[in-house]
Length: 131
Image (cartoon, rainbow, N blue to C red; front, side, top):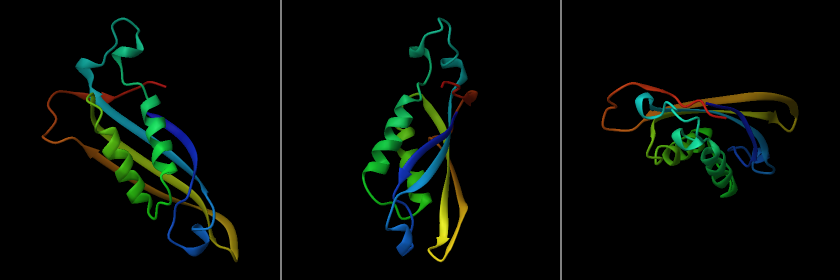
């Protein structure tokens, strides 16, 4: 799992959210086939390296404004599930945003989406614990 990946993202539907980037925090869980990803030689090549996840999140955010957290979660999941070793994944987002310009208190907004590859997974899956 990857916890607390923080990026500045242009996200939201309100006028004041369209004006400037906001702090976005992602928690991402990736599930792999346990039998194929239990390291034998203590080598990074034997596991799913989370660097590709960090890279794809940064690329997605750089593409431009995202209206909904749900859209961002779906886009990130689509990319993660392209990795041949990933069987399932979960993406959670939290945006600390102002309720409005006249109400400056920050209030977190959360969203979580989970998806697995189809057809059904066979075997035992487990979180990929790396970095």
